[in-house]
Image (cartoon, rainbow, N blue to C red; front, side):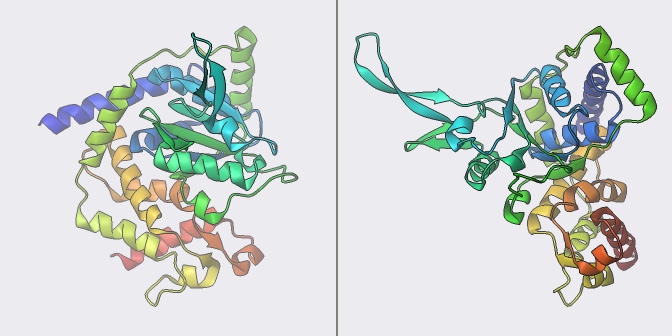
Length: 329
């Protein structure tokens, strides 16, 4: 009974968050849902979309709604790791003596927008992704912890590839979800134009705080998952591996590399949060199916046969889901 009450409150709070976000962001329902899921689950998001579709506005509004500090880092080829994390500088103290002082970088915020992360050099990318994984920074043998909740939304532009450094597969795997932010519909575009003619400022106001987000995360962690649903999720990830003896025909035909164990962890963790968002205290097959695309699309690599048949990664994931349902019956 106590858990039911908590789930109800959480579901209502998330509904209010979404209402506030829609004061500043038009449409993009699935993107908003999945970004909220990732924040509560404690993961990071890789967002692919052309410039101008509202990525920065979404994160800034989210920061206001959650009452958390927001920071934006524009990645460029000349950006150094110290520009992200911070560095030690020599200053004079009040007595005129020289001392080393740590100047914090823009990564010291709760919500960070890493804009066009693939434009930075691999060295800077590695520093950024290490921070995302560890939630702490070490400079000159001194470790600094980042405040929780900590969330990074990194963006990539799918059009321009000149002067970019594609993220290695091992680093891509550290993103909990990869989301595709499409161009708005004609009606949504008209609403965006009308909204921005009045004011470019965000109108969202704080609904919850960081402490509440951490409480939501703890509630989701403690949610039970029945064996059938767990086996369904684990089988889906296992069936992405063409080299395994017991695997899917889809993997053998269309997949070059399968997903890592992190995919199964992300699938279950996010499914728990999605269930709570919908007012449920149990994970369903529908939760797994809905999150399979954002969890797997950056972790699974298709082979030449899929490319030759003009199948996208989402097409292949769809085939995997259909086959997995039959195999798990």
